[in-house]
Length: 125
Image: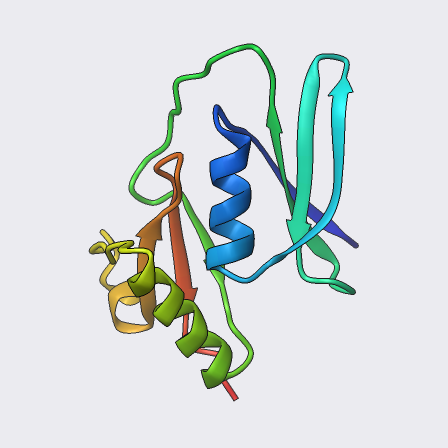
């Protein structure tokens, strides 16, 4: 089974920069003006998952809670440290998770749309 997480955004360029340039994911694909939508596919090559972000003329109001998270598990300490260094270089603050489990087992940040993202160090080799 493959997995896609799809979400609309009001600023596709900020989202691309955040997930690609700061978090280190890759642009896997993109489309323009498909029934009024532009979009990108972001993830890691040769994995069974990716993120899809779309944008249209519609401006949306985001509706999410403190427990709505995207959780990623970098595969090495080097990858985790690089992400952490990128976050600090771009002055992206770590935030406190509502669930203390994530404070103990990773770092939490907000993406440009305000959604919570966790980088966990649990699976690091």
